[in-house]
Image 1: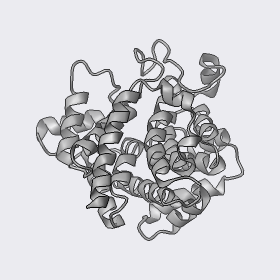
Image 2 (image 1 turned 90 degrees about the vertical axis):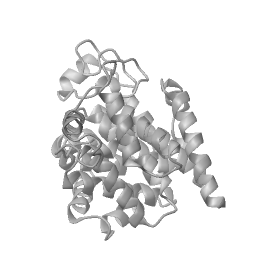
Image 3 (image 1 turned 60 degrees about the vertical axis):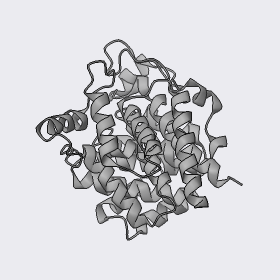
Image 4 (image 1 turned 180 degrees about the horizontal axis):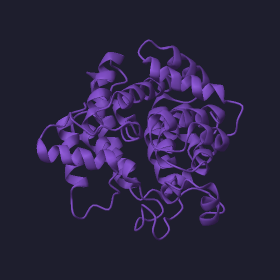
Length: 317
């Protein structure tokens, strides 16, 4: 029996582990090129020279994971409540710093441009339908787990708007949140998948992505991801992540590696798969050797402990 605490912890760790495991192979779309550069993918490959994340080392987070850690620390500092101003200031400070080593994707660049024009407006992110918010939202779902889903959905919407002012991004973030919330309540993955697909809280577009993932359920992950598309936009990446998790719902390691080996924006997909299967399998499902590789492990541990102390206090109150 997996304890509720184990599911909560693993959803958070799984998100960071999935992201970091994909660092060196991220955004390599040509599978022959991927096999040439990394012939035996085991996760946590070091980025090669000329790679988007060149200069980072095995165990570091991609820019997705960097933002996810900022969000986790923001929630911990704000007593388990999402404050767009606090997260927004942390995000702006980190990604606009001259010393920032994180890659600046479209959502980040345009968000920073908007903030230059409208300082302090943290609800006017980029016109972007890619993988930014869905790669980081697990801490918000956990923080609002005892709230009605209306409150969760509102927090997820406000989180999305910090960097993505786009209906598809909001729809997919909400669907991701509902699936993760259902998994954290102890529902097996494939049952949670079906419940989320049918949920009235999930938009028609969001539900369609579950349908797409289910339609190709007999295909292996690499083939199915090629059909959906390996790229960053959520109409391709979200069903690809759902498919990988559905196919390998009982093994965290296999699910994460399978989506990594499918190439493209595998870090964003792996962060989602990691959160979902962390919640489904608990801490025992995440390889300890992978946990130990995380460069930010101590920082993540501190933020999780601080966040959980607030959440425990809310329960007792």
